[in-house]
Image (cartoon, rainbow, N blue to C red; front, side):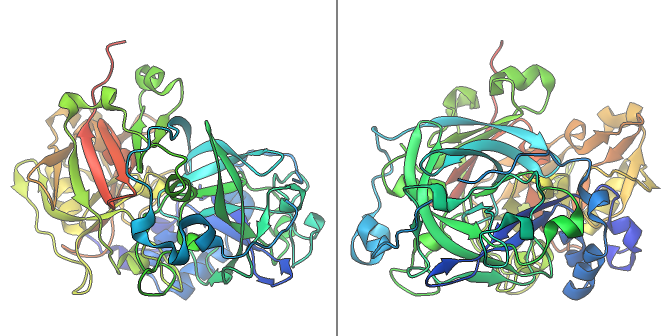
Length: 505
C-alpha cells in the first residue's frame, strides 16, 4: 500500500474543504485588538504528511468559495460590553494563587445540569449559548480540542470598525455593549499561534476579557478569548463565516499558564470548567450521546446529539457500567494531528493498548520515544473514520477485497487513500476492536459503523490513518462514538466509556 507521504496532493484534499474563521485579539493595556481565526476541517490533513510551510501554502492557495460555500450559514451583523479592568481576577474567584485544591466538591446539589442539544454540520457539532448583558445569543462550534471559548467581535486592525474586515452579513458580538464585560488585558498576556489549526500560516492572536456566559439554566462569569481581525476577510473570501464562537472543552492541566505550582489560571480553561469551579454546575462530568440514525433522534429531542453539561445520562447506559481511562499528554499530537506554534497539548488523550481486526491482533507502536500510542477523543470532523495504522488499514483492505477509489467527497479528512467495497458483503466483514490502557474491555466498531454508504450507492471503508507503518495515533470521534456513551471528567482528567442502552420508544 502506498505511503500517503508519496501521494499527490489531490489524494489529500477533497474538493469540499470547509473553513471556519473567528477573530482573535492582541492589544495594548488600554484596548483590545483582534485577529481572525479560521478552522479548516481538512487543512490539517496537509500537516500530517508534509512540512508545515508547504501544507499551509497549499491551503492558502485554495479559493474560499470552493472551500466554504456549501456549508456557510449566512447571519446578520450584530453589535453587543463596558470595559472595566478587574483586579486580581484569579484571587477574587478562588483566593490567593487560585490553588487546584480550592475547587468546589465534585458534587454540588445546587448546581445546574443541562442537556445541550447539538446538531451535525460538516465541521462537527454546533449549538447555541448566550454571552453578556444584555444577553447575546450566538451559534457555537462545540470543540473538545480547544482550551477556551473564542468569541468573534467587530474589531478589525485594532479598530472597532467591522467594515474594515468583516462581511456585511457576518454575525459577531461587540463586548462594548455589555454592562458586565471586563477587560482582562492587564491580567492575562495576549497569545498568538503561528501556524495554528484555525488559520494555518496567518497568526491567530487573542486577548482576554470576561463576561457572563449563559448555558441552559446556568449563567456564570468566564474568561473568554476575544478576536481581532488583521486582514480583510470579506475581500479575501467574499462570505461570512458560520459561527460566532468556538466552545472549547479541552481538559485542564497543571502548569497551563507556563508556571509551576499552583499553575492553573483562567486564561487556559474552558467556560464549562470555570463555571463548575465557581459552583454553577452540579458536577465536572459532561456526557455525549450521538443519535446518528433517524429512528434514534427522539432520544436527542430531535437533534443529532446531546452534550449533557454537569451530568451523565445513566438512563442511556447499559447495566450502569462505565469504564474509565486516565488522560495523558502526547507531544506528537501537535505534529501529526494538530499544528500549533507554540504547541498545544490539551487533549483528551488515552493510551491505546491493543488493536484487532476480527480476532487478528495488529501490531501497534508509539509514534516516538517521547510519545505513546495516542487515542484522542474528538467528535468534530477529525473524529470521522475509524482510526487505524497504515499497515492495519492495508490489512483491512485485503480482508474486505477493497479496491482503490478516488472520491470527490470522501467520508473523512485523513491523508490516506480510500477503498471501495461490495455493499452486499458488509455483514461478512470483521469487527475492529480497541483496548485502552486501564481495563481489559474491548470496544467494537462494527462493519456497519466503518463502511460508509455514499450518495451514488457505493460503499467505502471509512478509515482514518495517520503516522506511518505500525505507528499509531488516531482521533476517536463520531464513528467510534456510535452505540457508545462518552464522558469527559474535568475533575479527574479521565475519559469514561459505556455501552448505550437505547430507550424502547
